[in-house]
Length: 385
Image (cartoon, rainbow, N blue to C red; front, side, top):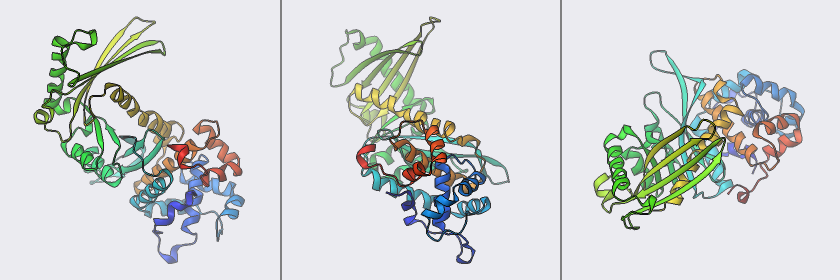
């Protein structure tokens, strides 16, 4: 499905008499330029000029390449929610119904500025939903300057079809409203618990302390029935250290009555012990979670590890391959450019040529043939599931 099909549900934000270039022309050149390495509206316009014959052959009623001011003005007028809805529809048509792990996390775009009341500015912050199994961003929601991620996360969950998915989020989302929103969406959750929920944290910490003292199954001498408790151990050596992870999952039989969190089925303690081979130093960290998942320690261990794919495969790539933190834009244009980056990353990642994302961007800038391949989106559903 061609990338231009994203525009099917999007209305041109300009007045009729101010349209020197078609909306299709502006979007298509901008999308191609971002795929090919552009990081600003100046670079988008320059990319268009360098590839003018390519665009003339592919865009109906092409006149000339718009100026950087035109790109900036149009994407400033365009409602981010309209572009977002077009993107979500496009992803659904390509991927079909997704039922895997969805990691939700926020990212600050330091170069993008949002004006607050009183004339001050702050960095733009975006909450994204990442489909870990196929490496696709399912959607994003801007964090309002008058709230925080706690308000944006439920809006994002409600906007997406997440039935049958497992949703993982950091401790900021350990809120009753967010948990209820997930269950109402017919999805499961695994959410980190920290001291921002002091009573919950101390209750879970106390239960696992008692297990360590009175029912230490890890050393094979425990007395807790398997219907209430499971654990698993994973070990690996890499990067000059030995790492041992112990995942304990517990349900005391009255969990939902005691904790009063909607849908809670288990509490989790992940103990991560790292021994650094060269220095001999050892560190031990304990992390707690609540989840609607049953007592399956191996599945929960893998779910916890997979959550970090949003940091490593989305946020890191946006920073390193797309240099997103350094991109200086304002308001709608900043949010829309962030989404263009994610669309470009989807195309680049799911292209089967063997090269890094950064390498593929350079190749797209060098080769009209490869650029056309990326814009025409030849990959199919089964290639990304």
